Length: 277
Ligand code: PEP
Ligand code: MN
Image 1 (cartoon, rainbow, N blue to C red):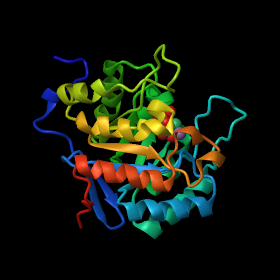
Image 2 (cartoon, rainbow, N blue to C red; image 1 turned 180 degrees about the vertical axis):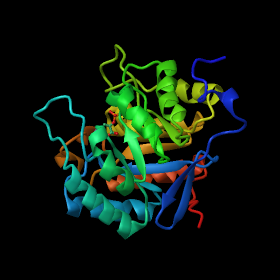
Image 3 (cartoon, rainbow, N blue to C red; image 1 turned 90 degrees about the horizontal axis):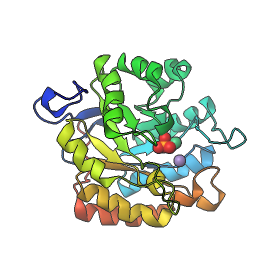
Image 4 (cartoon, rainbow, N blue to C red; image 1 turned 30 degrees about the vertical axis):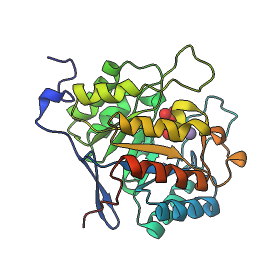
């Protein structure tokens, strides 16, 4: 028996499908469809966010991303707009009808984030923040659990186990690249992890080709590879003008490049909007 008891493939029959309540109905992740999450690394201004949100909706993106609390390596880098950014994201939700995914860094933000964000993201740097994972296990909210930058697959599934064990079955895994000796890319994308998770676990898995590579030119090819390997979706960073992005501009697609990515993805997977009322 695997050490991750509830996350293990043998723990249940069939795959976990995570229901995401959206203003227009319910969206399902892990049902054989490809779920596309996209948006800027961080919410920077109301004007930019609302503009890009409307463009993404028109392209067929299912879920809007946006960082409010940014886990930056340097304390001098832009840290995110925090609560102010959440008001902007909520406006985008009302405008587009799309659900929101955003990272929670601290349990102290849970009281107000849980009801204003549709999917709570646990970032790579917090994958083993066990206090946070335990608190998220008490909710019924969908959780997007990113793989730690140096986490083994077993450590990652054990982190998921903390949430499942608490009573929250709604876990979506996200492969976002791991640290290796390679320096040309920001991380090394582990496409094999997608296939392995499908063997080891019933949980849905998506891939973030933006953080996995650090280079916008690699995002579309890696997104395609992820889908070919069996991923249930992708999460992509898109900025109206990447050159002036306050974080992760080098890995962000412009809206026209995101549109081209979508054209490629529809050839490989079912991405039709599957919001069920
Ligand atoms: C993010 O998605 O905003 C992020 C910070 O990613 P990661 O935790 O994978 O570095
Ligand atoms: Mn980012």
